[in-house]
Length: 138
Image 1 (cartoon, rainbow, N blue to C red):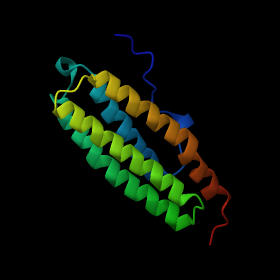
Image 2: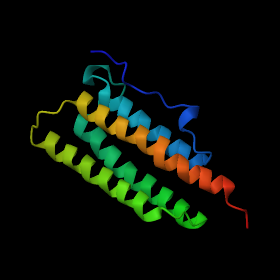
Image 3: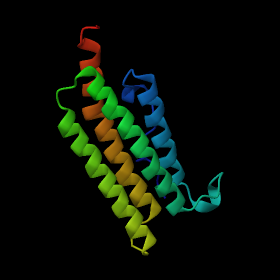
Image 4: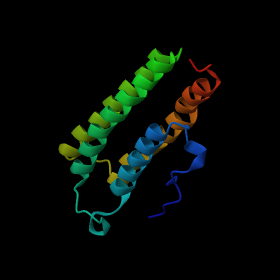
């Protein structure tokens, strides 16, 4: 299988918020584990276990990120929050699909989630970062 679609975590996706960046990197690591064949995984976690970890961690991350937006008075908070809710719903759909023997492979799920995450970070999250940087400090 060709892996040219895997986008590596790196400086182009940094928000400048160390905690947010660390959380994004953790999500990328979970996606990397998901696309790694089971036999090659360092930890023998099942796809369901990895999807569960992603689900649990996105709640932590999104809560933290949403609090950051509130703290800085980010004007597009509600639209950003809706993106988070849509992602959570999609991930739950993948969990249900996988649990009930759906046709999507780990690679297809990881590819979708990764592309969403990259678009989200490079689009909306970097807008928050730009807003936070230009906002006068109290």
